[in-house]
Length: 86
Image (tube, rainbow, N blue to C red):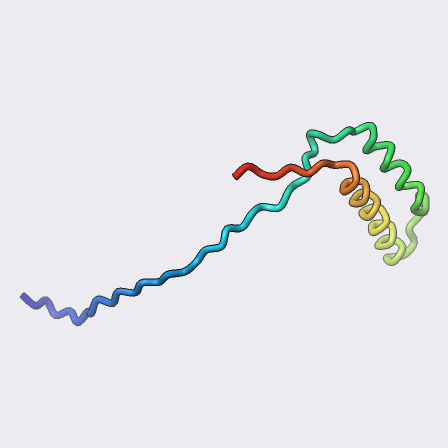
């Protein structure tokens, strides 16, 4: 019985290797010694210019960069890393 269809079955077989990607370690904020973190951040903030009125966009971006660098430095130094469970 022919129903007027002109379809041809095409079967494709692919063999692809899938590499396993491991998640990078993340900061374990629950294990932070907050007293040491705050003391270290206070010390690090002493290295950047104090609070002043920001009169230009360049001064604003410099202040943001300095604050971000201070937070990143102390985070890398004092916040332990945790590997996610598989």
